[in-house]
Image (cartoon, rainbow, N blue to C red; front, side):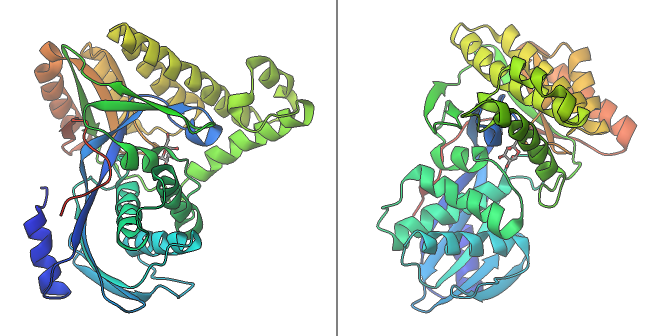
Length: 386
Ligand code: GLA
């Protein structure tokens, strides 16, 4: 349930100080297609959602951050000059953002903050990017005269994952959280950093997430191994071809040339990643023509690749994908990093009710738990609320 500004203000007063700070929000994201392509220099096609993170922040004139997590009822204090920072990950995100902003020369000072969110955790909707982006945006506003551009703010969040949480993520999640715009998806070229807004108004279709409620945790997960596999293949190709930096620069012929010297597993993963960049472009073309059948077909192909070649699916997600197929859903696939979380489904309006009913019944029957259905509404990116 989304907290209002007043709810956050009342917790801030109760747990921190009887005064008012500024309030900021940053969203989670969906991704229509383009998974595990960001760190390979490919394309992604995300949009921000309405669910997100909200934080009240007030500079306190010291070098200490005093932070209260409303959802977890947890409190911490840390010095912004400390190198180590707090242990709990929900506070480490804030610590990391503070330190990365300081590295950029933003004269961050101590502050009091209370924060909360309604992005389901571990659902592949980027709750952590929402938190990072919320604080990066806020600190830029409060201490940095808004001098840091949005893409750099997204990179602050990404660097926080790399340097303080140990997850070698790409840029998609933080990019989407910062740049989101209600009613628009964004196609980002992760090699050049260029992006374009695409209106998202599918006549006669709905986007719906089905959360398997298998919690995924990218930190310390095989996510980094997937990235390593791609880098191994790139290293082999780069020995033969100058200028190759990521899989985006690799052709099918180049991949063929190094088959013998890479592991079968690495080759399979690279095969998926190269194909996925083509699928994003195909989806964008199809969308412009209103051809949702092709969009859907690409989504199923992505799921198959993520499941069999990239191996980031799980039994529950494959089961949800099969149900979607059986119900005649236009497109369905794992969304986000994988290993649990949600499927994203492109469903004709007329099929929406029967699909949702079937998914609920069959999933419960098989796994004894209720999947959570989330209707996607594309919302705005990071912003100041009050
Ligand atoms: C996670 C990462 C992103 C991206 C996706 C997979 O969400 O944070 O950078 O790699 O997985 O597409």
